[in-house]
Amino acid sequence: MSLTPIDIDRLAHLARLGLQPNERERLCTQLNDFFGIVEKMRAVDTSGIVPLAHPVDVIGNMALRLRDDVVNEPNQREANQRSAPAVEAGLFLVPKVIE
Image 1 (cartoon, rainbow, N blue to C red):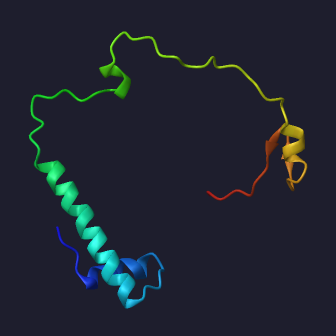
Image 2 (image 1 turned 45 degrees about the vertical axis):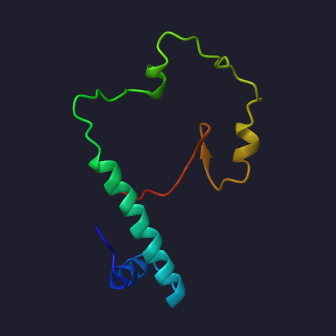
């Protein structure tokens, strides 16, 4: 896949970016280089390789040095909600946006 300067102009318009001509050319080159790397990765034959559920699965039964999941900061809910326009039962009240 190769992007053209016209594609870059369209993407810039959709993203509401104002690109100078030199920026457009540089962005086109960078994106095409990125897509080249993606194509190289897609060309690798991965048939027969089982995907990992988690990167740690490779380690096996090795014990990980993870910290204990304990609260280490005081509850500051009230202090954080003082500047909110509306709070009820410890929750921020916001206008309804879905009908």
